[in-house]
Amino acid sequence: MPFKDKLYRLAKRLLVSSEEAEDATQEILMKLWTNNKAMAKYKNVEAFAMTMTKNFCLDRLKSKQSSNLKLVHSNYEDGSSSLQKQVEARDSVNWVERIMEELPEQQKIVLQLRDVEEYDYDEIAELLEMKPTAVRVTLSRARKAVREKLLEKHRYGIG
Image (cartoon, rainbow, N blue to C red):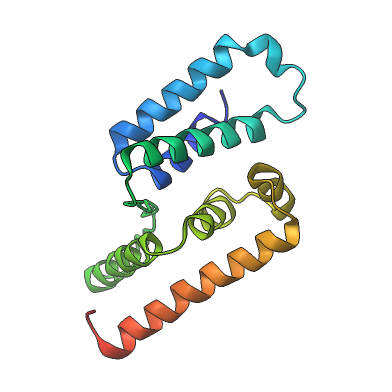
């Protein structure tokens, strides 16, 4: 499936470990495969699969009563930069990960779908059963929270 990696990244964002994300992705793909004839009625199977993944992961988190969500978006790399800049960039990514762990669940998901997976507002609204305006507001609040925490960290040094 062309969107398997997106399912995995969303599961990885919501679940703590790579193994759990792989299990969740496999489970969703099996459900899709088992019900492939029923999938024909959906216009956007990818959106349906993303919704299934989100719900599956949230159910799994609730069942474990875990609030330890993790951002894993560390593919930033600039080959022309010095070692110092690479270390600083890696440190910044780690800080963003830590800050995002503290965001409310809805903000984490919207930020993941928009800024990492690059979904448009209407797709996110459909996936999360929200109005596009609510998606924009949630995204704005999430970005503002991350920005403020990063500025605070840089202003005061190590937090």
